[in-house]
Length: 358
Image (cartoon, rainbow, N blue to C red):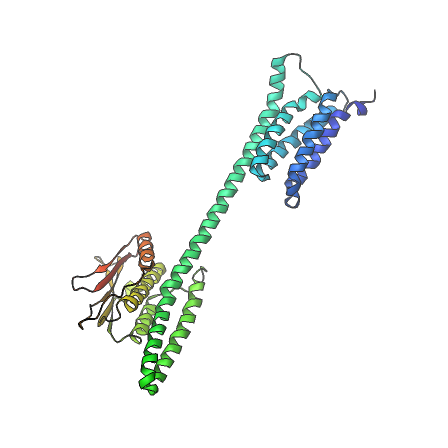
């Protein structure tokens, strides 16, 4: 008999398996991987009873089919949906075990088990490698999504810390303008000018906050703390004191993240004073260096407001609590510092943060 014809039962499934490999490997055709693997399994099951083949091409076809089946097991475990992948990989392992039976049937059961287990073990290892890479990729995707979620939360907190400070000032001035305008219309013009200035500042702060998500974007620093205090002073009748006890060496050695965090703490504390303690007669902002040695060790930020003096005035206005100070406390602790907020002995409110330079 023609050797080519006798090799057909081994060549046909080998060709089907080899053609299915690019279908399962190419990104644009992976949605057809499961039907392609099923086709390979059907062709192999149909042609297996016609063996063993004795033609000259049967051995080469058997090796090509075995290599293709190992590749299909890897690609199926790597890219196919989880449940179909398990079933198909088990069937591919069984097919790999039977590949050698196309060219030779051993004489004893022990020899059959030994011969079949070699390729079956290879298919198991290929499936395991594909599954491992799939798990690694899924973990990477989850890590990327978690990082994106953290960045979204950080942006939301930045918008709360920065923009709310300006918006609360705009609201306070708008309320004052409404009260003053009815009796003294001429005095509303300066208030409207201040409202416009704060509105423009809020827009600029929004743009700057968005840039914080970019590593090359500008970060707030000590100069911005002074601007925030001046903005607060323009919108409150309270006495506002700003004291900075930092030498040039302390300022030059301050890390960028420390300065940005200090700015956020001051802005959040002043915003809370405006919202919760509008009748406080005095607000103090202090920046000092905790430097026991010659080198700067930490930045200490303190914001305090004294209690109201007039009878009947409430220093703290009741309202739903926010998460600004909680987020700042978490960020301070992440930098290795300490954060404390609460009433002081005088009845006012104090926010203190220690931010280590290292």
